[in-house]
Length: 201
Image (cartoon, rainbow, N blue to C red; front, side, top):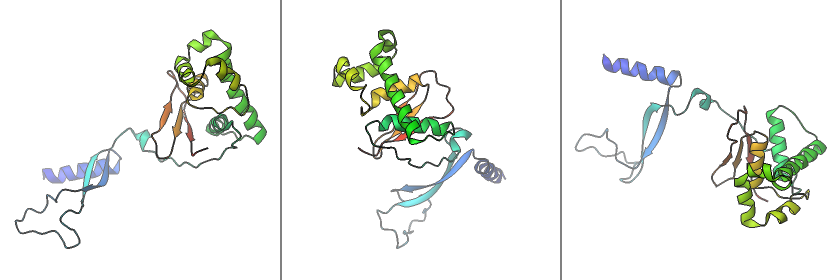
């Protein structure tokens, strides 16, 4: 009787999303073959993988279970593509569509906002110390401040660090076959993160 109750409990958990069902491959022999002369079926070799089902608690909250569909939106590769992709992603999150001129102008505004924070104000620069460190590993701050003014300036991690905090916008960067990079402002309450996918230059 207790076994039936447990089964019903597990089925209820599955039904309401508190548990999940998965097939797991195991290189170990099946534990269900307890007979001494039991051999695996001919389709399995001695070293083949067996599959078994496992039911366990679902990971994460109910909000983590929602299905999200993504599509890649290409941006113009004119040197300001990082800034264009941020502008496009943030506009998408707000339900706004930008024409090419607005996209370009807004991208340039983001680039210049980085320049103002890093190059024009010592006081503001102190708030973005990790970005300044990342910049000065490769070049002098003076050289950076000259380059960032050009419209074909290529943005990177330093600019994402600044813009994430400046715009109070979580940013997630996906790079195929690499790990994901996250840029989250310390006290961010944004509803959506801006998701970027870098697929090569």
